[in-house]
Length: 486
Image 1: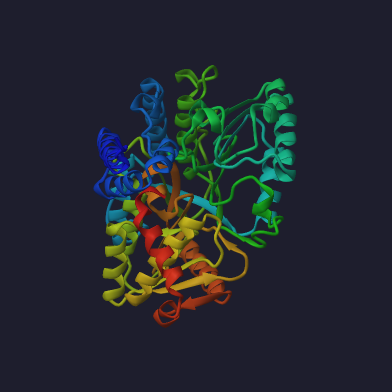
Image 2: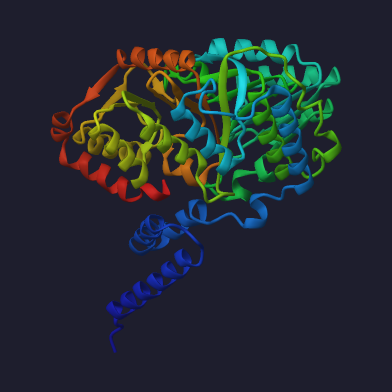
């Protein structure tokens, strides 16, 4: 009797489909992600399940945030005290921020408990050399504490320079704490940080996932970039710690990014976020209630002019606070909305906001890289660039190296600078942090930087996309189908 291979094949297909359905539906996720994963699991039976093991599994809720509620309460009380001392309560519509900005302030206050930090001094950095020169200078002058949290902390030239300085400060009695992401810092192990540990400092991989192999997940990465020195000086933005961010890698060449140096009450938002992430990560050296005091939240006498809010988002919340902030700024734009992002994979809500703005006469422009660092992500970016160009939105490919800045600026009045890209991953799967700024001077400076980058970019027209070969369009369309899981 001849064996019926076709019957075996049909049985395997049915069993695979059943497992695919059970696998995808057993965890809560949105409809777009469900269909994307079903597509992968059904049509790529073995490869699909391997991919799901890496990037599909949810992180257990009990691991997302094992926070100490009393410490959270102490942080909230400390911030409230600072707000009272600084007079930073939002009072009336005639205050020193615009009527339009008040709705954004209220949004973040409600969804992220983010307070309006007033009178900050803010400096913008766009190249790694000047940024790290200033970071090193500030670390050298630290007296009490140095808190560092980065997606990438590479074991390379600048990584070792920063590490050696941290070791030196720890030996001087400064409290040094470092959080790094095990996937983003691939190649950097606990052994790399041993000199710091020996000097009395601390270093942990985010959520204590000690290796890429044991972690076995590409999702739920700590994509935040935070430095807080003595509770007085803060840094946040798009740069990580690594040689490529100083333009030392031939693959990328010039690295175009945007980072902020903050002095003032805006630093408290960065400090609070770091403490919460630290207590979710560290296994031995938690920051306890009695330590959440003036040491980490000193009263500032800074007399700057910048009003801002520090906003964080991540898979520990369903609110997608930073995405809502992006949509809010887009819908508030009356004259222009300029966006920079290395990845352009927006969901339907962001797409609709961009289309409505453009259809309302707002000058919407977006700059993305002209080179890939992740093939599927880049092809999906090209797909959405084509769609938006056909909607009358100006999309540019940056030609002077790699564009890694994550910025948005509208109408010379409001702006955002941070770690969150314009994509699904930053909106839902990564832990992110952004500064939302309400200041004409900073907004105008970011606009000028954007227009300068336009001069180093190529406008992508619908005609240019139409001339692309069919196989390239196919790769873009196929990558777009995977957008919810990229």
